[in-house]
Length: 439
Ligand SMILES: Cc1cc2nc3c(=O)[nH]c(=O)nc-3n(C[C@H](O)[C@H](O)[C@H](O)COP(=O)(O)OP(=O)(O)OC[C@H]3O[C@@H](n4cnc5c(N)ncnc54)[C@H](O)[C@@H]3O)c2cc1C
Image (tube, rainbow, N blue to C red; front, side):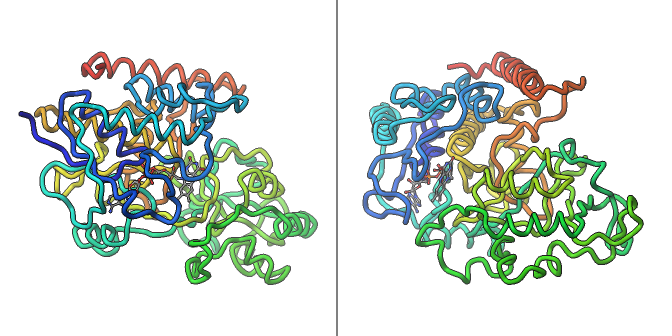
């Protein structure tokens, strides 16, 4: 009899992980604390509960979310195949009846002969092969057990992240590379200057922009000390952010020879400089509002967002320090993590990481080396994101900005994304065939 794997948490990631293991002949005990205990956002006893939106994002492969789902489908994703059985009309998006979706996933998992469901809160790390997928609202007792095993400073509880844009989309005719007072590397920062009129228009839009609602458990003002949303800081006075994240001191705009009225700094997100972080711009604005308002900064008028700023409760690991690209813990190789807690962001990204962890655990138990997901795929990009060291690790969803650029320049965005998607699916299929991953 092969080793039994314990999967903790029957959310999107845990169900996918259990499904992959069981389909590959590995017995699983799937532990879920509901209905004995509920997180503040979960309400149903069913597995794979969608706690907020019922959209699984775009369906077409020329959108990042669509490509991710296409890749998942090739690996036999339970969530993707179930979504198609209970979809509701939503334009170009794949949206589901959330109750039907959760019920169908629960049924499939519970009826699998190799999966045993154990209801009740897990408070200690189980012995033996284990995949932890307890999500962004992991119970307190279990969070404490994880901290004890992994180290106190390895778990974050709030996600307060600034947006990230692609370098190629920054209008360099309105930006200049320089460090403040010329300290540090010449091109450490890209500065996005504004004159007085531009700043005033930006400021007005910022203080009047629409914010995403916070949940009850996210209202605690202490939570965001030290990472105040830019729109809240702005409301303290017209010049507050000109003395904060937008301060122009130590900068000279080469176009005018003068200090700008205000300047946003962009900092490199990756060593290659393909993505930039908007420094100090943690925000809770609605995504569309971020695009509109930040687009008033001239250098960002055509910016493509790899991720938007977010603020919400989110338990996640400092994965680049803790995990390998196969989602296994570096210090305990039979312990894997999956889901939002690894630093992926979104329903389908969480489910995708569950698929990867389930496959990699199977390989480990079969004495096979881990699969290396091609860097051209969304799966590969997410696996790389969670395991590549970075100064300020923050969760990230699927995005074309995470994929290596094409060898040729395709200016038309739709055609470029279509080419990236075709390249990704070809690369994934080669790995599926080569590693015999189809079941
Ligand atoms: C409030 C909120 C709203 C969100 N809205 C969206 C959205 O609209 N769209 C989107 O794409 N993403 C959203 N996300 C982000 C993310 O995609 C979801 O949280 C997603 O469900 C994460 O999947 P998961 O499998 O990692 O965790 P979950 O789906 O949360 O599953 C974790 C499971 O583990 C169980 N569990 C926790 N602790 C224990 C324990 N100690 N013992 C046993 N079981 C335990 C939980 O009960 C739960 O069933 C949201 C996140 C939050 C917190």
